Length: 496
Image 1 (cartoon, rainbow, N blue to C red):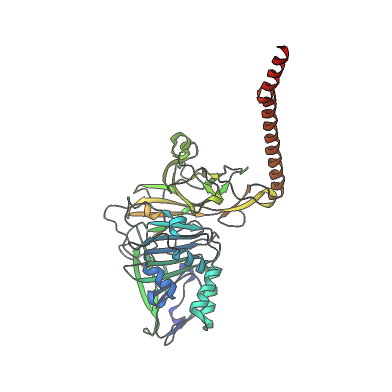
Image 2: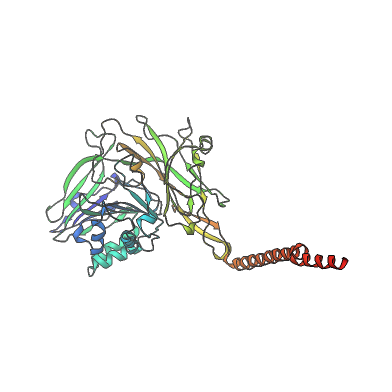
């Protein structure tokens, strides 16, 4: 097992190298005001047996979780996703998609996940555009990692009390990534915490390689526009007797812009809610390359976008939208929520910023539609819809490469819809109210308290209709049927 712990601080929160104490296999020092990343790299053989079996049947498996809290990013961890649990999967050749193994493990590790099998619950990603996309995608509105921490404590920590303390810290993490591919044959688990006061006290196991970095932004010589420069101190526990100064740069595929956005649903909600995006600037991050603004949505199956509606150019222009660039296929426009097994759909929309108003706030509107949902007491139910990720996609200059970097984050769903030389400049979410990136909508459904009267009334109407039909048939029979013919013959005989 290998560990890499990285602390990233602002320049004004620097630390004196002399204040750090490096022991045989430990490092300690004063508290820091930093963002933190903790990455653990494991061989497949170090995992529980059921996970080993799953990974050996997978060509690629990437799981990404993002917090529903809106927090400011710092350092190289600027990539963003809609809040919730994202899974991207490519099976080994010949693997049966109807296998329940993957969904069973997702439920075991993350809790109550509505997933039956990749064939039924996952959606297909396009593989005819760019080869760096996985084959299948899944999403669930998971709000916390409580079940994951319980799972890790059970399999990795007993009876190590220090390990339990570390695992419990995941409750404050803003993102969690689990990555596996058949080429590297290792699993990387990466968690990121937001900027806060952090205690610097790290101990390493003799059989584990642990690398600790304390970094801050800097500008090395010959820094390219698409790169991020850092400087700081690096220590390998058990090998170094003191921190080593470092200064380096690396390609940064994801960066933050200076602008922000918020999203809301226009009232009244009804069965056709409209999501409105408020963006405080239409200025692109760079004037030297072509950039276009996008919104990426992951919509649970109870809500969807209509691709036919979003293919009307005049309609799109009226909503400050340019085009629908991608939508999960197929999307059933008529099926009720309770009759579906697919997780939902993902949508990539290109927005249309107003021209000539670089510093002016503006809005864009995304029309959505709700499915009929299961009945509930009171006639209403609450649903959670994640806020989208909003970013500028900029084509890098010719010759620009984005090789693997120490902090690169790939397989996010939307990055597979762009070319490999695309950089992403993220618009920071700034939600109103409680700061949550989840929208709660109150949806009208069949009222269970009234449904018995509906059933009784329907049965009564059916019986009355049946009785009316029988009455009319009997009336006709009595007037023109067998009985009336017999009576007419008897009358004719009497006349004769």
